[in-house]
Image 1 (cartoon, rainbow, N blue to C red):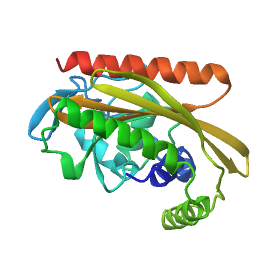
Image 2 (spheres, helix red, strand yellow):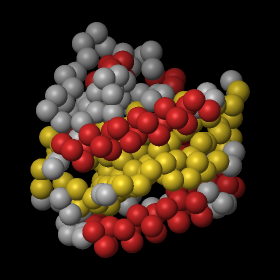
Image 3 (spheres, rainbow, N blue to C red):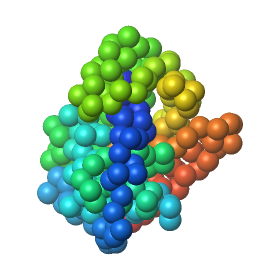
Length: 239
């Protein structure tokens, strides 16, 4: 996948729909997915939430969040803050400050991946993750401007160069990488931390993304801890 595209999608989730937050609210929020059971690659999987503060909206409203996944991936599960469910109920994307996504590559959804192949996949993703950070920021900026315009947003957003955090952890069946993405709007600069886990579950490859606002060095520790605990919970739930 292209990481500059992932960068843009993250920014869109935080800023592109901020103007509809108040108008999209309803009195009754939809029920969230409580069993955390999902289908992918012809199999059933369990994806628990990264924390008690994030909930899965269920299949009816998860489709609203599908634009957050790049075309090469299919969104399997999404976890958002409870107040975002009210906006999802109106059929629009809420502004997301902390959220998580589980995706599967479309071209490999039904491919059986053994341990050796998974290691190659994880190593390749780790290499591309670092290399992708040095891509053309002008191209990313132009594409983001087009996306914002298509959504009817008049807010100006400027992308700064992402800062790689390197590999967050590596274990049997999973590896994770992180980065911090500075974004400037009329209200100032906001930094967003992202952790990406690549996981092998029942011989299928999944990507798990966890996003949160970056404040200081403690955010990196929290990002790594939360993402590793979430990854461990996913692996354990699917043993």
